[in-house]
Length: 409
Image (tube, rainbow, N blue to C red; front, side, top):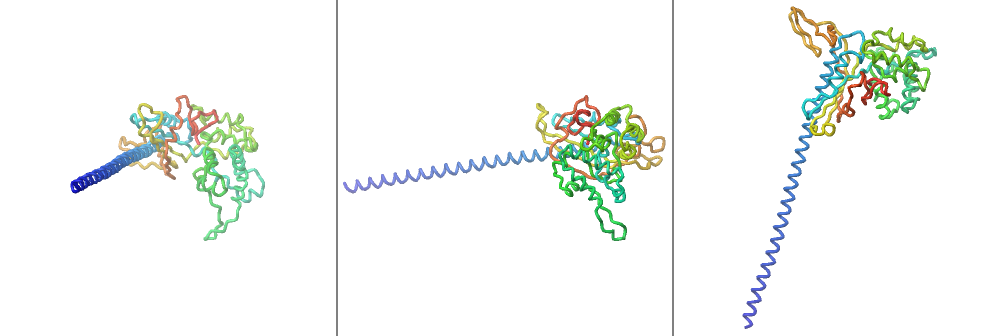
């Protein structure tokens, strides 16, 4: 009896131990399944993230290439200028560019916008250089007028006006002679960033000044183009003696009206000086203006991956800009040959003949020399949509001239 009882207890214990082992195995299996599930989900999530990154990288590359294409479009329009005697935002090539490039849609998911901005309409910092002998003479000079104009611009933007005085001292500093014994010269500023670093001007202030002030070689930008200068630049120079206000008076208004007159822009410096009759130091200020330009900032923005159902939001954008110097050169066509360029030339009658521009005039032999190339994320030119009522030369934020904007910076 006792043996039977013992055997029964042994069998019961074995069954209990077996049940416990089955419970442990079940827990282990559940843990393994959970880990495998987490691993699979993590792998699937990582795969989706990689796919999104790849698509975004592809769309960003497409946007960048499209923006570069926009630069080529802008170059083509710039080379269609058939009037070498003056440059204005009222010319046909710029009006056609403004209409064509305000929102070119390639397909429901891709758009391009491009523009050309005249750097010659800005005040060139390097033109404020003052020879020492003129400083000592205390006479009114063109350089002094430009520095007074800078005071007006700085005051308007809250930039320390003492920077202008430091700039005058900068041009007068002693410089060691060159190795060949010739007198040394204070170097020009290579960019606005160089100017800001030299005088401690914050980056935010430089961005605000960028639409009216630039730093370019004096040989490429010796004057301000009165046809493309913003109203603020015109007022600052014309009324430089009235620091810190430099008001936009009747003279400035007349110049702005001529800028916007498509049929009658200023075609010579004589047209500019005629409008400045009665201005203080008009003879000196007249030498600061011209009606031709050599430096242009070409800008293009592209958007890809746009939602066709909501095209005004979303998408991946890229912006590219290029600073180019434009000049004319001797014709290089040879009889019987065809020459091509951004503006295009055709061979007719056995001689190479330049193409024709928007007005039907033969195109000058323009050449473009790139000076810098910049790219940035985001489609900056799409931040505000232009309207059909806009006149030539809208500002960066696409406001119309006369609405506090003036012309492109």
